[in-house]
Image (cartoon, rainbow, N blue to C red):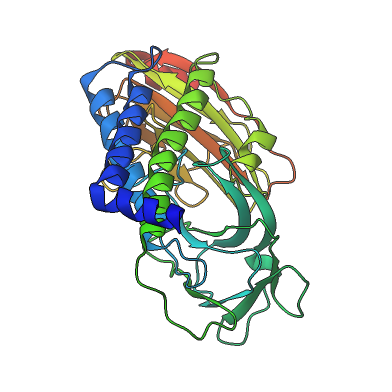
Length: 372
């Protein structure tokens, strides 16, 4: 009882709020790391990034944190971005308790790729989001109208089943579009099996835990991906394969082979990214991000090309062109006012990923370089 009273007093006195604000202040040090860019745009985006992480963190750890009464929310979207968020994706997340059983009901829609993965850990806890179960749309049994039910439990179930473990605390849904204007996303709901009560009113213990977790999420996420960006400085304007195990440990889709790197271009330069051939795959794309590993604003700038939008070279490969000005090329990519940042290439379901080659050229010589 004393402990409960102490928690209640810390809420009433404002101590919980002060500790929350102090933790957010510490997160700001990630924007001031010595290797981070100091341009006004980069710094401004850095602080905006922290506010975006906070919004996501509050959704994740306060508004949608009760695993007894779960609901789907978007952990990355147009104005909230984490770890090279895919511009072609619609992300959803629901909180779980691995001791419970859940059911996801949905209309499959027409989106190109759909996957569900249960996870444990968290960027606010151990810096990981390790997978505990996975299924994608190719394995789902659908009715004649594209409807389905997916059961989440520790023990196997007939029909559509997604494994959870005692430590599972979330399910991540990825919907990947070839063309957002034409494809229809899946419509999904999630509920705990056997739930027949209503949520309890907000308690002092819950607000203390939720605010603490949200603040730790901001600092932990900012630190994790700042470390990643720092590592990419070793290979500027190249695009080598990422550490695939590391990508999986932080929540990557097991069907995806990832490449991450750093780019930096002078005003009179362009970066050519060449894929000698496109392997048989379910999806691929390449995207341009800022230093904080947020995809650039794809609502207004062409910062990504995918399997649908990219124009093939005469030999069946693909050449993409990143430049500060319009390169007059069908696979042009915009820097959107940035002179440096990060980038990501992903193959989905490719049996043999094709590694890209890159080279920096003078923008004035771009036409000749492309012919070569």
